[in-house]
Length: 106
Image (cartoon, rainbow, N blue to C red; front, side, top):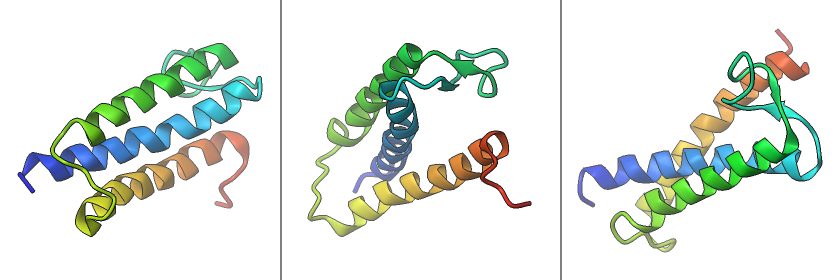
């Protein structure tokens, strides 16, 4: 792998992971936090904004994963790099959204 490919794949995983909560809430018709809310990341945006934000995240993930190098799901190192980006952002989401939605025990 060229040096920039693992960076791109891990960020691609992060964008792919970030699409999930926005799309799920948006398609369900629920308001949810987004960077466009006031205050950013804390206030709630409409379901339409969240669907659009989720699909933009999917598009960026596609560009980061499929258009940089030759990503193959049979290449363990590349899949682990992608997964690492997803896990890291998932943990950040769990802590951040947990504060707003009662998911943190502390």
